[in-house]
Structures are given as C-alpha cells and as structure tokens.
Amino acid sequence: MTELHDAEVWRLDTFIVPPGSIHGGTCVVSGREGHHGADVMRVRQGDTVRLIDGAGEEAIARVDSVESATLACSVNESRKHDRAGNVELTVAQALLKGRSLDDVIRRLAELGAAGIRPLVTERTIGRIPPDALESRLERWGSIAAAAVKQSRGVFLPQIDEPVDAAGLAALVGEFDLALVAWEDEGGATLADVLSEAAAPDTGSAVGSARSILLVVGPEGGFSEAEVALLRDAGAQSVSVGRRVLKADWAAAAIAAMISYELGGLLP
Image (tube, rainbow, N blue to C red):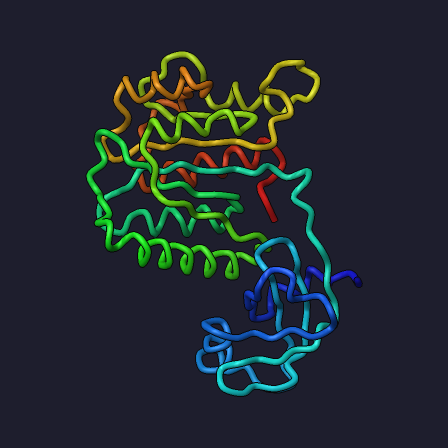
C-alpha cells in the first residue's frame, strides 16, 4: 500500500464500494454509486476518483471504463484506516417531528459518529409506521453516506432500528461511557465528565473512555423516569450549559464537543 496525498484527496469525487473490494488492484463501482458517478457526476474514462468501502479502506483509482452505470477502476494508491485511537461515538437520538432526524443524521455522519440509534421515548412526537421502517432506514443510510463522502470521511455510521428507553438501557453496558444530555441535571456537566474521560491516569472507569453512548431526547425532553432508568443501567446524566439546545441540533453540538475534548471521532 502506498501513502495517499491528503492535500489532493479532497478535490476528488468520492464513491462507496462494498467492504473488502478495494484489494487486488482493480475495483468496480456499480449500483446506485455507479449510476451517480456515470449519469450524475459525469465521470469519464481516465478520470481519477476516490474510493472508500465504509469500513476503513480508502483508495485513489483511475477510471478505466464507464459502461451501463458501472465504473471499472484501477487502484493506484490505498491505505487502511484503524479504528483504534479514535473515539467511537454512538448517538441514541429520540425520533423528531417531520424529517428533522434527517438533519441530525447528516450532521453526525459529517462529524464521524460510529453509530446512530433512533430512540422512542414517552414524549416522542414523530413516529414511524411499521410498513415504512425499511424505507426510512434506507433513506437515512443514503443521507449518512452522502454526508461521509462530502466531509471526506472513511467510515460509514451504523444506523440501527429504533429502540425504546428500556431497550437502550440494556445496551448501556456495552460502552465505556454512557451520557444522557438532560436539561434538568443540576450537578454533573459535560465539560467535567469529558475532562475526566480525557485523562488516562485518573484510575476511574471514565478515564480513557473510547466507546461512548450519547443519549439525546425529543422536543419535549426526557421524563424523570426515563433518566432514572438509564442511570440505573450505568449511564450518567449531564448538563451542557444554561442554554437549552433544540432537539435537532443538540446531538451534533454535543458530538462536536466530545470530538474536540477527546481528540476526534472516526476519520
């Protein structure tokens, strides 16, 4: 593998290929990505493009041919990005009204979130009809993919099916640190918790946290019972300051704070 030139990569059109397909010297961009490249971006033979597989592989490739919305490419340079050393942030975001969650997913994907878990709470207004779940997940995946390409990311976030507070509480133990953004928290602040998490020699369970769950509520916030449920499972409720952030903006704002304090999310 050769080293990619970061200063030049951002200018190239980016396309997503299946995990593991970059190896071997050649690669094919097909399906929706192939259509986007051939028919929307008007990629032509001889062009240079950037490829990612969403799982850490990145490459610069030459387009050898364009046929039937398929780009046949020769890989010139490639490298494997490691998840180690980066914070893997999963955001459990309560469902929101209309298509506000689309914006949340876009922002989180741009920032480098590892996972996004839609959440159903007592005060959730937005609901997903069972027969619309598959199409909704597909749309969210497309939004995340476009955001990762636009931001020159490498890893695609995992977007899971919605879960309720009890289901989320059962997942808290899988993370080094679980935070509940709660406007009624009068003690612990996000800044204090992140300061401890950034200090590897504290000897606490919070120090050196690399896998983090961030839980953000709906327009009406969490109920005390939901916060208590998550606390009992091991999560910590935190305040992010005096101002109350809008539900469709809070997750991205807090994710950016976590990224800054702990040295970055996934590339």
